[in-house]
Amino acid sequence: MKKLGISLVLLLVFGAASLAQQTVSSHDAPSKADVRRFLDLTQIRARLEQMVEGMKNGMKTGAEAGFKLKVPNATPAQLEKVDAFTNVVFQDFPLDEMIDAMIPIYQKHLTKSDLDAVVAFYSSPVGQRLLKEQPAMMAEGMQAGQDIMLRKLPELGKRIDTKVAQLADEEMQSAPGRKSVSQ
Image (cartoon, rainbow, N blue to C red; front, side, top):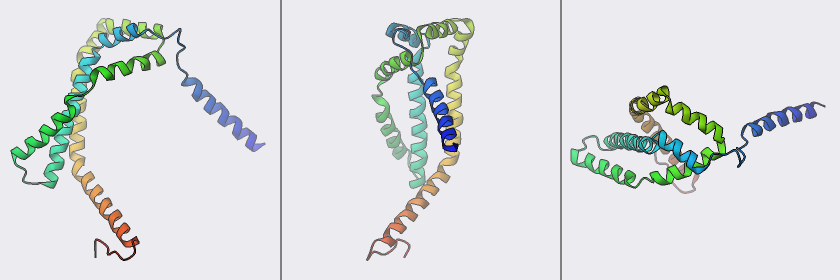
């Protein structure tokens, strides 16, 4: 009896979760044009460009900090090489491909009437103000997150180095005929 009760509870929990995750039926889904109209209204391309720029700047700062941990007296020329590599990594970021990939996701999760209501909000004065202020809010949030990561980076690097050394030492001790790194 107890097993039956547990089974029923699990069935209800997982059943409710699957109902909550059901997708929008195809006849209620917004069209590609509807989603593109929304993405254009919310200036998604500019937002993605800003996000990529923020990621690039964060990666540059993190890469420089990591390089300085390994090369404490790094020269400006060496740091420029680190920055140049980061620029190369981000130069061909596929923004159009990312935008195209979003369309079916919106179609899956929102009905046409949902999307129409969201478009109405973003078309309103409050929605326009939110769109106007979002880039500054995102930049400030990224800066705050970057500051936290930079503060934590040396500690994280030490913890990783310690764990890697420990794992290497354990591996060497378990291998027959090999000496430990710490010996």
